[in-house]
Image 1 (cartoon, rainbow, N blue to C red):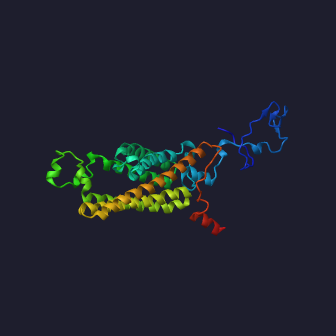
Image 2 (cartoon, rainbow, N blue to C red):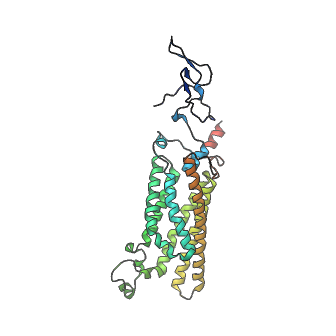
Image 3 (tube, rainbow, N blue to C red):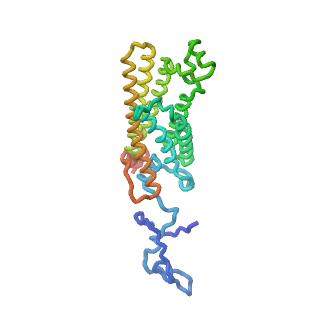
Length: 318
């Protein structure tokens, strides 16, 4: 373990001086009689820093962890790696293809059914692992966000798997049910109004959660705020699409509801694609900052612009 010397540390000096010569330490001489060190330069030791004394700014902390800087007991953040990027990878590799499917690009469709495995193993597994990592190092907000979306992708993927029978259970007509010979996942359930309306309510509640996240993200950065803003809009459009599908399947002559549903699906995909673009931007920013890359990109830090309640309290008590 490095020995910390009693000196004043210059916050703007970022290099560790290791220029040792045969006469001593960077301009000092060894006194053979006493074994002491005579400091000729006057500021040599003040320019030496131990690895444990290096702190990051509040802006960099917020960029790396998507949360305002907070104090926790111990040195967990120095012990474990940053879990934020891996959770973002899971989110982006699930959401971006889904957005393209919803917009019907290059003939894509099926509400993302082709990416069911991605929803489980990228969206679900990676985001849950990221959430656990955030919990370990004491970052409450990203822990809740990543855990919520990890569960969302698992639930969404499960809905698409026939063996879960999420939509097949809505088939009550014996003749239609007989076509599956007892197997779950009857696709006819997708056209039952009750299924579409029920799934729409799940999306409404997910939109409410994203709205709360959006408000909380005002203490993080602009890019993160844009992610939740567009998520609220995109999920809202998809909820509207399923409500209109319920109306269309209830009355086959209701062509207006079917048209609205189709438009809502495309609009929802467009909003989610914007979410993905913001997510890729913030992912790139975190990776560049993690590697101390010479080129950094901004995310619009808000943690110092919108003061927290504790900061305002300190100002009022000063």
